[in-house]
Image 1 (cartoon, rainbow, N blue to C red):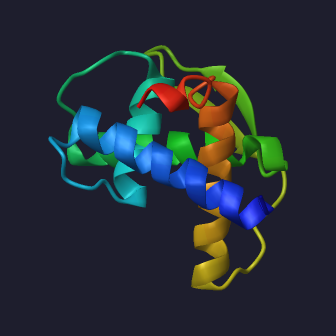
Image 2 (image 1 turned 180 degrees about the horizontal axis):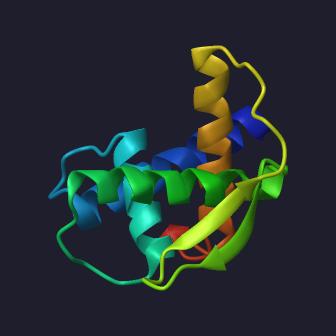
Length: 123
């Protein structure tokens, strides 16, 4: 199986599992998955977030997702328990399609590190 086919298969597994778990069968988009990752990384469980907090959650997720690529580094948790990252390297100028591939690869890498695909045959 080629790398592209493997990524596509893993992406489909992520979409199917998360959509059935969090969206009552509706298909989640990339932004919704990033938001869920932000909630996971915040570690405070399900709660209602204000608009600016939702944006911050997505920022946390992007930082966490791109940390292994050398773009961000975790710095500290603030007094409210929110993680903060510092920029290590500026993101390159990417075309929209390239951005999409990078973020999807980063999401797959994130879930792979969580052991998300270990039980994929049981779906």
